[in-house]
Image (cartoon, rainbow, N blue to C red; front, top):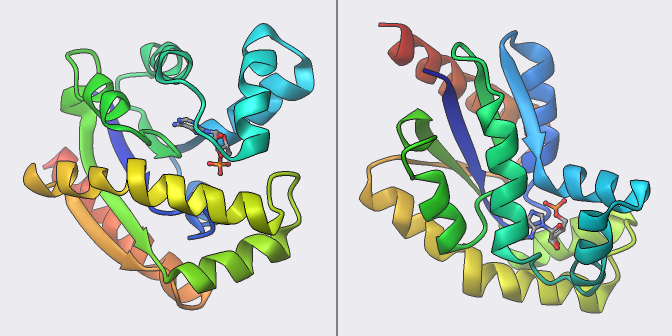
Length: 191
Ligand code: AMP
């Protein structure tokens, strides 16, 4: 049985940075970012990319049906010993429910929730300079996050699967804490 760790938190919290560094620092972990997957589909001009692009440009969420299909395809190919950092999915309750379904539900061991105040996030996102990082779009993405994604904190807390990380600190400090959490997930899994 594979292990899935969900990364929760607002845009700009550093989930992607932390996940990429952790996957480089620890063997076995794969970093799967749905934002990166979508940007690849857009760049390739695929049908999914064409359907997703307008939502992404506005800072809206891509429809659940596209996202669930995209992630479940990847999870089916997961090898039984695989360790997956799921970055950017789920972002809605229907996505979380799909992930909790029979195919992957038992693999979800933990949701790590990266938190930081909105003003810190806005400053970071504006400094990043991505196409969907102008101020109006950034503020819209944060509003969408608070309304639609933040309720997943309760979803995982109720299942006793939530761990919080204060993401308003230096990257190496956060990384140390994150690696400790991942190491304990692996140790629990193996014992
Ligand atoms: P990210 O790189 O995680 O900030 O994602 C960039 C954009 O991709 C988001 O603003 C959404 O438009 C889209 N996206 C990524 N993951 C999801 C998801 N799980 N559900 C819906 N839209 C998503």
